Length: 503
Image 1 (cartoon, helix red, strand yellow):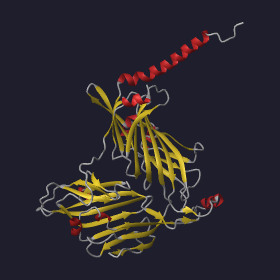
Image 2 (cartoon, one colour; image 1 turned 45 degrees about the vertical axis):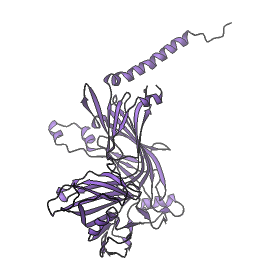
Image 3 (cartoon, one colour; image 1 turned 120 degrees about the horizontal axis):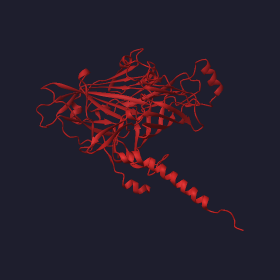
Image 4 (cartoon, one colour; image 1 turned 60 degrees about the vertical axis):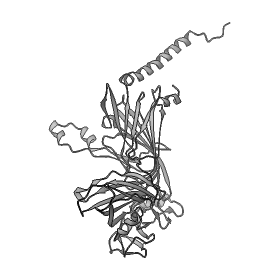
């Protein structure tokens, strides 16, 4: 079968997790009966990701003519820079997640619609919007020698960023703005505050608090900066190419990740000296500039891992299987199995061939196998069966940003009526064919791509597909039998031909 003809016969439906309901442009925000009265936000620094949250205290105007309990708010850099956005309502044990729906925006601000629970008369409700953005900090100084014992990063941001997505009427109701910036360590070198805010930083504390001095509705951008110490080297993934292959015959789900790892910290000043590096390692005085290892958490049940780069297999790695794999290797009584704790994640500890200094990169491949039954389930669909697969979009590594992700899911041969549902909106999607060992018509594939990912993008892509029982059981045996029969017939014909030169 020709590839282009197979694509015509391969229906693929992509269901986005969030669909736009109404598109508008700032500042033409829709009217709302909810007005914010207080705003407090926090910024957590560390690694190549910056986590921030903004907590709004809202009060509903009972005399408002606007009906419905929906509040539209804008998040700066929520769309252009990608990242992760989520919202919750309430406090403590009563906190619940809200359905976040994109309803418009521009290059700087993305607007979201949040369905709220109707409060009682005069009661206030609390809404918290959390974001995770990548590459919001930069090294200062930008270059350091190899033996530097510490690195410093600088963060700069607008303290009024949580107000950027509010209407002028809503901004006028805000009485006070408080922003807490939390550094990884108490070693904060320089703090720069804007004119409209007061700063408070206690000695020995890693938290810097900025508080507005008065009304903030008419204030221009209030840019503050914090110059802080980063205790460890920073890791970032420039590109991640993941290939997931589902095999019904082998009852296996194979995952292979091609990773381009980068150290975005201060660049190396001068030349790298291997002897000095080994001496420092022997005395346990390695500098903070070098990235020496990386730990990748893997799902429970991971087995047969491998790790190689362009040179070959890398033996400087260590695999720690999950607790379920360890317990299954020993004989247990039924009473003991009931008391077995929940399986923990496996861990793959990688050590590159060379230390990654600032600005250096390292490309490598990691692969492993998983039991297919843990990720693929079946359900009845009329007279047949429909398969539902939950494929991890990526393996999240804490505080590590992923600039580009390409996920290719290879389904078994003969799969049809394919429906893909990612856990969040993706930048692009496509369908195709891939061929591997003992394949005849090729495996249907689903390709998803997304930029500016974080460690919160580790959700599962749901893939629904049909696979007739006859196709699943007979296609590969018939293909192998056909190849062997062709070879056998070709051998018979070749033996009957006279290859010699007649006299």
